[in-house]
Length: 328
Length: 165
Ligand SMILES: [Fe+2]
Image (cartoon, rainbow over all chains, first blue to last red; front, side):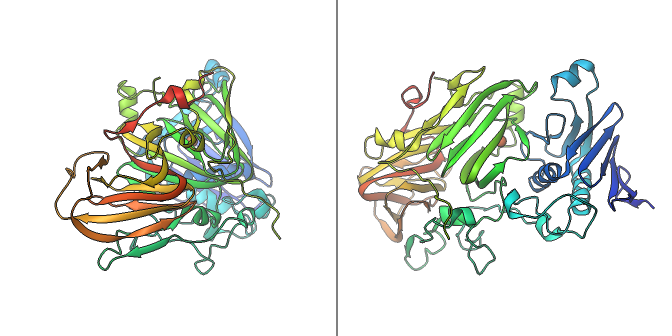
């Protein structure tokens, strides 16, 4: 009966709805037709399965991302880059006060394999957790097929820049990236590039807005250009950021098109700190001690700008990097 | 059928959002707008709109012909409004320490080999390759967002450009 993944993460048998149950350390994950139910030694929690799968998809695709990925106000992961904490109630003041919060540390590879297995088993045919709700089928109901092609999409990571020979390439109908219905009016012209012989690898340019108009995923920052550790991670957004992202470093947003509104809360307690309304051309920092969730009523283009330096969390811990972006 | 209208900004037409504070300091969000900044800048003034340790994003008002600049590492110019011609030159001699950070302006056009050029419109992103020299040309005022590292002529004026209350 036991479909063993490894010692720490074992999938148990299949339930009445046709879904496997998974365990990782003290955590157990079950799904039924509507909910994911998570149990740990001091409590339990339920999330709507569509929301759970959208969050799980981001956590897997981003390799636990920077800092904290809260699936909601109770459950999530905290990345320590190589190992990762899975927690319940750790960033929830009531759970902390009642001392029922729980956290366990896992090797990165062990937990990601468990999460990938959950995502594969619990995602039904026709449901794409990366897609906006209006662009995909239902996550609900009994187990019905899989959608592994969608949930195992490769994340784009350009080495220098998209469009440079040998690097990530631009998108087209032919490569399977039609223009999204929310971006039908985005110009598709490419820049005029005139490279002298021998300089074709260095005289490079591409239409970023057209590239983004052909993104088939939402809320999935991927690298299009890298200036040393400075990474442009644009993404297209529609509906709600599935996770509440808790920062471990300052992060910046440049709104490239349309509008997103952000709820910003204290990272540790969840107390509301601000709402940030971003329109085309707006630039805003997100301090290193907040968590945030974005709302995009129409598909929009957001440039997420990250400093990928692995030294940063330690610098913040030592007080060498401030939690605020600039002093003025 | 085109159901949706995508809203981009421009120098002549932009609308700023805002930070609505519940319990915080708006300065922590360093909230600005690249079109607003460029509309109040001189030609090719390199105004930092975002900073993360040594890395910066600069909002640049492209207008006329810029100086030639040497960059020790890749920089990336995203045209946010207008049309910008990027001219690239492979210098005959090394003009900047490859371990340096940020690009530097040159007094005159250096000797070297023409590499080619890019004509970039709104939404187009051009690479300014490491170890090379470039300049911008814009017949009409345009806006560039430059991904780079702070250099000697990066301009900081946060109090002028950011929401403070
Ligand atoms: Fe974030």
